[in-house]
Amino acid sequence: MGLLFKNEGHVVFRPAKDVDLTPASSELYLRANVKAPRMAGFLVKVFAWFLESRIFGTLLLFILKRDNLIHKLVTNAELEEPPVYVPLHPLDDKEEQDVKQVGSDLSPPELVQQAIECLPVSLENTLNGSNFSFRHWTISDYSRAYTSGEITPRTVAEHLIAAIHESSTPPLQMSFFINYKAEDILKQATESTLRYEQGVPISALDGVPIAIKDEIDCLPYPTTGGTKWLHNLRPCTDDACCVKCLRLCGAVLVGKTNMHELGAGTSGINPHYGATRNPYSRSKISGGSSSGSAAVVASGLCPVALGVDGGGSVRMPAALCGVVGFKPTFGRVPHSGVLPLNWTVGMVGILAGTVEDAFIVYAAISCQLPPRQLSVSPKVNFPLLNSTKPISSIKLAKYGEWFNDCSDDIRECCSNALERLQKKYGWKVPAFHCLLWKQYEKLYTSDD
Image (cartoon, rainbow, N blue to C red; front, side, top):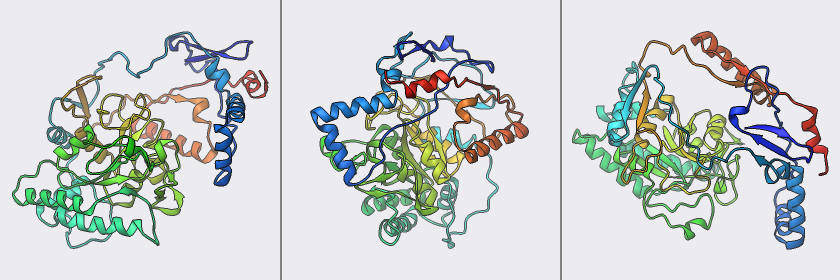
């Protein structure tokens, strides 16, 4: 939607079809200018007490909303078209290049196999099972080592449990997990080991350790959402649909990862379960809210973990921890069994060490298990990553003012990435701009 200012000091949100997105656009762009007190510890308790009081709380809320333009941009705003409560749009079945179309009615193991067939043939040498020096193992690494008999899921589980314990206690105290149970991990790993010994692994995910954000139901663990009370009000009685899909593929689910409390923050600092530390530097945050999931992948404990992303809760910690963060389209991954904190924008997402691993797990959890409540096209397009022909007809929209609304080092890094894509693959990056009018500045200084 586009903004149109009125003399009364509020805005009118125009329909998207009326918004000019050409390079000569005169649309307005509002730079973030959050005005809120920065506090911690005892001051937060005092501030919360004032907010909860009838007299002072009402006044404080009014001032905070006024200073942050809530009244002008939200409360008193006019919408010229009905709001979209669910982000669903008419299907546009355009033919895509280098994709393999599969049906979501396939089982999770079948979808995983379809994804594997889209990957390039690995040229890596077989792993040496006696060498346990650190390296980031991929799903293919695990599958190949298990199949060859060089290592077993049970052995991996034993090493993993020891590593989780070491990372959870001083001097490391990384706070990756809220909950994990060694007995349950070993039970799953033992069953997977028997399947490999009998020559009947379920899929490439069989025996692969995967962690689950504590916003997603996964038995036998409670779902706390990063709190100390939520699981008492909402007990976990069954696996989430995405977790069921992973179990059907034979994955070893290793526990519930730490998160920013109720997903309401981006630092990953949890007052109840500890601050999830960045594996690359203990003094740095891991980002949030899917902090633990990003950190366990970056640390090499798991090749993949599940998170939930509403406004960047998978992608931000992925960026801070140097892993792949993927947020699927609304409705593509079933949301049943996930805390309904922001279900219209919050999707089950994937954190992985490689694009290929994210793709394999996406294939598994995109399965629509009964009862089906499909809200998107039943057809899924898997990218043919084994294609030798580069895709050259890609267009990336670059919103000039938004793109440049960051620090110089970030802008330079992102600009270099776009430039490399343009040079190497011939991708086009058309830019459109909005003007920063002085009328916007008045919004922050006017008293109405």
